[in-house]
Amino acid sequence: MLQISSALIAGGLLTAILLPYLGPAIVGFLLVGFGIASVTPLAYSAAGRAGSVSPGVALALVSTIGYFGFLLGPPLIGMIAEVFDLRISFALVAVMGVAIGVLAAGIVVKRPGVAVPAVAPVTL
Image 1 (tube, helix red, strand yellow):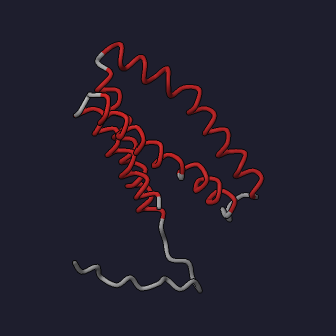
Image 2 (cartoon, rainbow, N blue to C red):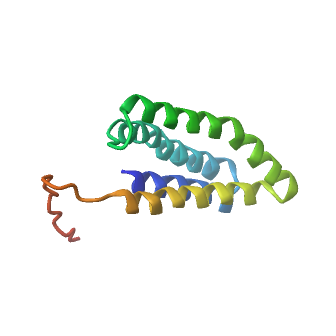
């Protein structure tokens, strides 16, 4: 799910960057919203299942990091936009969206005793 969210975030921002007109930008930011909407609940879920610390501490850490990003993200995007360009700052956010997908691919591990369902190949 995080990889799909990553693709929606990056694809939406790239749509808004490459097609800077009202219609495509609205569709691009709609895709970004759909992508971001699942990241936070998935992060809280993963934190609650963390075995290294108690669920309460893990949730507090994830919440703190989230609020930190919420407070620092917009000013950093604005500073980058002021120094370079708004498109470049959105491109950096798109790169971070791709990083979510790359990191999510490394997080997915097979747990002992948990069956991983087989996926049939998709044919068109």
